[in-house]
Length: 122
Image (cartoon, rainbow, N blue to C red; front, side, top):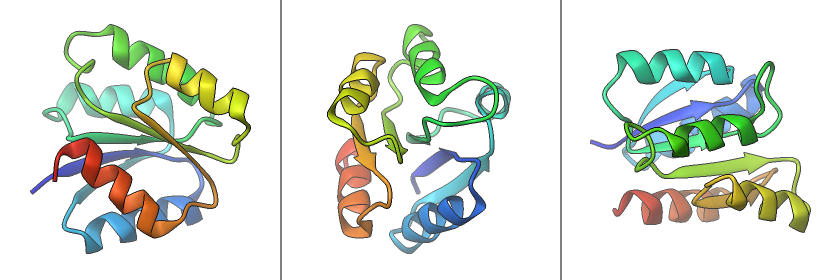
């Protein structure tokens, strides 16, 4: 079974992502900040994908993505950014930080699952 680490501080958005992923057979780990994500990654073997919000308390999703992609332990984990920051420049900047895909909120649930499955190779 695949595992997704969701980094999302909005409870509503986190529940939407979790529900979609669980219905498609993906196990979910949920944290609310970049700092919690880094702690979880230290204690948990690498997830198959990281779903990452941009606007987070503390370090932004852009900063976390850049950090993840610079570390050998986490650089190979696909990162899907999902954010209300949905301008072309935001998407460009997310991809420049190392994101493998970028979806604007509110997400289209079918597109979300297709994107996740494409990134984890299902």
